[in-house]
Image 1 (cartoon, helix red, strand yellow):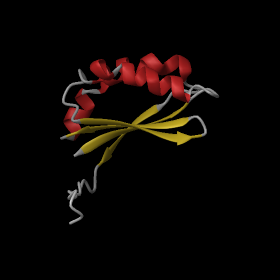
Image 2 (cartoon, rainbow, N blue to C red):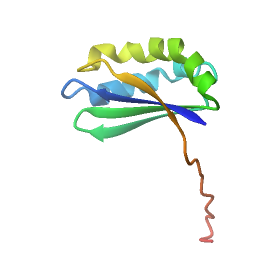
Image 3 (cartoon, rainbow, N blue to C red):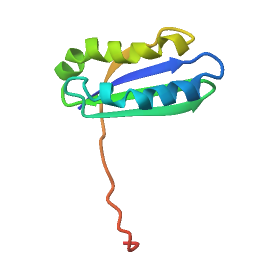
Length: 102
């Protein structure tokens, strides 16, 4: 599994607006080819981390034009252009928990 890792520095006080705008873009984000999962982490200090997951490195590369188009809609809120970096997912584990405490 591969992921795009994009750290964005937003203009002062613009993170909440950027996150709301990203929520509004969820349908367009869903049109990114071969995208399996998408997350945004608010790092504080007007920084956010965007993570997009793909099955293969080729899928991640093929998604680049559409991903840039969609995320580019946040450009007016960014303090600097973000860099989209491809990373390999070393561990992907989901814990299953029981509501009965076991």
